[in-house]
Amino acid sequence: MLNLNNILPQLDQLEIEVPSWAYGNSGTRFKVFPQKGTPRDAFEKISDAAQVNAVTGLVPTVALHIPWDTVDDYAALAAHAQSLGVKLGTINSNTFQDEDYKFGSLAHPDERVRRKAIEHNVACIDIMDVTGSRDLKIWLADGTNYPGQDDIRGRQERLADSLAQIYAHLSDAQRIVLEYKFFEPAFYHTDVPDWGTSLLHCIAMGPKAMVCLDTGHHAPGTNIEFIVAQLLRVGRLGSFDFNSRFYADDDLMVGAADPFQLFRILYEVVRGGGYPNASVALMLDQCHNIENHIAGQIRSVLNVQEMLARALLVDPEALAAAQKACDPLAANEVFMDAFYTDVRPGLAQWRVSKGLPADPMAAFWASGYQERIEAERIGGVQASWT
Image (cartoon, rainbow, N blue to C red; front, side):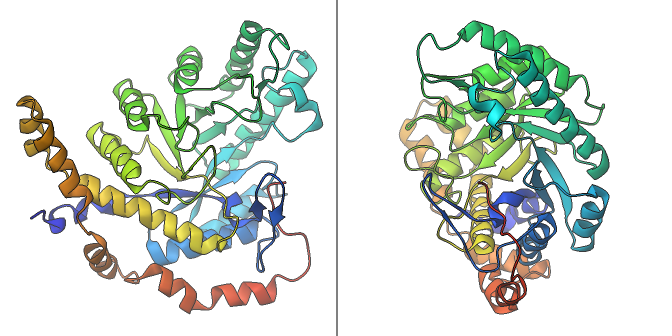
């Protein structure tokens, strides 16, 4: 019988960053669905994120997306976050929604467009200087739809040059985390389609550049835990964007599609020294199309906590012995014993011991917060990723 009490103290260091955009309206590629009580600015997004932290104790930081979260006074936004018990985290740049970026941004053939994209990322670093954020996350929609549309190698050279210019503006305490995605919106080729391409650019930039792994950004059947192991092995895994997908980049609640995959990923995180490790940021990146924004984030962070607890239950000595004996059935049994252990009662007790509600979801619904924001947030423009 696996003893959950032995690993509960290791959960004390779990911190999950939530995205500000998860609290705004989202939807499919064809329609954005509004919800009552949706935030109208970054301050209200931070307030909603603080509710997730209040009932779970797992969400100390909130990522911002620029220009979606542009405010006049970032110091005031940071103070607002601090007053609610959270801090501002990763700053995400956006070079995919401006008309100039139709044919790319940092890899665009036109130097003027590349300069505009570079300056936007440098402006994001300026925001980081004010908020105290460590990471600038860069995700690019750059690529082509048709063979011959542009010079594939030339785009890589331009991208490398643009990234180097952005990297030069980082302080000693700041990093770039470069995300990858194998397709969409560019369907013939994407300029940063996989972890190898991201890693090559990070190595070229320098030691303050790390790979960001989005769990939804892989082809079906991809062994994501292998990628995690490799990036940890070379010390270049900077952050996760946790979400789930059934087909492509579905941005569903993490653990919803394949809890066993999340377990396997987190096992490799633990095995490779990625937890506890402040240099590997565990973040969510998802949109709540039909579910309540705040409750969806609560469910996601609890799913991560639960699967981390199960990953910590894997008996390393028994597993090593089975692996050394080349006994695949015994080794797999060690894995499955941990995965099938019901850790939820123990996690409820752990929360109570920390002064948190045993059932965070029930506590949120009982708090009256959702009813209050639905009544108060009347008028204005609701936040959205469109």
